[in-house]
Image (tube, rainbow, N blue to C red; front, top):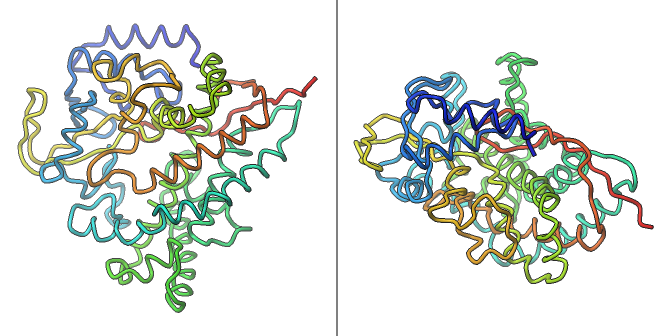
Amino acid sequence: MADDAIFDAARAEAYSTPLDKIDVSVNSRFETNTFWPFFERLRREDPVHFTAESEYGPYWSATTFNDIMTVETNHAVFSSEGSISIFDRQSDDFVTPMFIAMDPPKHDAQRKTIAPIVSSDSLTNMAPLIRERAGKILDELPIGEPFDWVDRVSVELTTQMLATLFDFPFEERRKLTYWSDLATTDTSDTMTMDEVKAEMMACAFYFKNLWDQRAALPPANDLISLLAHGEATKDMPLMEFLGNIMLLIVGGNDTTRNTITGGLIALTQNPDQLAKVRANPALFDSMIPEMIRWQTPVAHMRRTAKADFELGGKTIKAGEKIVMWYVSGNRDETVIERPDAFIVDRERPRQHVSFGFGIHRCVGMRLAEMQLRIVWEEILKRFPTIEIVEEPVRLKSCFLRAYRKMMVRIPARA
């Protein structure tokens, strides 16, 4: 939804910049949604691309679907240790290990500990509660007047679900939103690093209190209890506990909430696709993964080479970082037909890398798909039309494709 003139200027810049000077990590382009032509050019001319100078230092980019899959599936060479984003560790005195940023065998053991909460039986049991809460949120929305869809729908639904997964005090659930935003938003203009660390430690001690309570009780099927009783996690030091808690907060919140918002944008821009789903509700099966592909809520993941490796005719040297740009792989025209289009009856809708692949594939992907399906079923039951009345306010980040605000209006029925 970027202004046409702004997008045209971005395309002109993308194709006039010397190839070796292209840096696709520029955060402001994600805020304005004008990064697309830079990836388009790299996929065509230099799919495995080296950027020598950037805000985050030198890095390699994997921009095509197949090259991303090569990196994802070769964890013996491409390590997750240290950092899973283009950002390097900000402070050596504030390190928060988490299982997504670990290699086997520790990664596998910690990931397995929380897996029961997203088992088929667990999802079946959660579905009625998700539907009930989604219905209540939607029924309380104002009609005929503008409101912030991000806050009233996307954030509230996912925060309620996250509180359930943690068995977190429900009346304090917006603490989860605050901590998630703190972890994923550049706060340098408003907070010092010491202030951010203090807030993160407040999060750690809040959860440590819940941990101690659950550890003294019989095991239960909530994330804190699973961690407190799991053999691979029960003796975690405080900072590793905080790292895993933040991983679960962000992973269980930001990705789904941004696809709820992105999904509304997709359907608003493509009324013919909305009409298809209304005429044939069976298309929810393909529409939800298509929304996730089209939105790509996590823009990238990063690995560090443990040994020299040839990728796309380029040699990634040991110690160098390579960024897998999911936003680019999901628009790879050599693998995905008409990738820029939003197609609710796409033949292979799950052919995307939004959840990653291999051993680090998102553990909560089925829960995310279930949440999205239920909320969109309930939305389409209630509202013939939802109008976006202002350009969405996007997060200034090359890591998450996130929305901070989107004003909408639900017209009154005649």
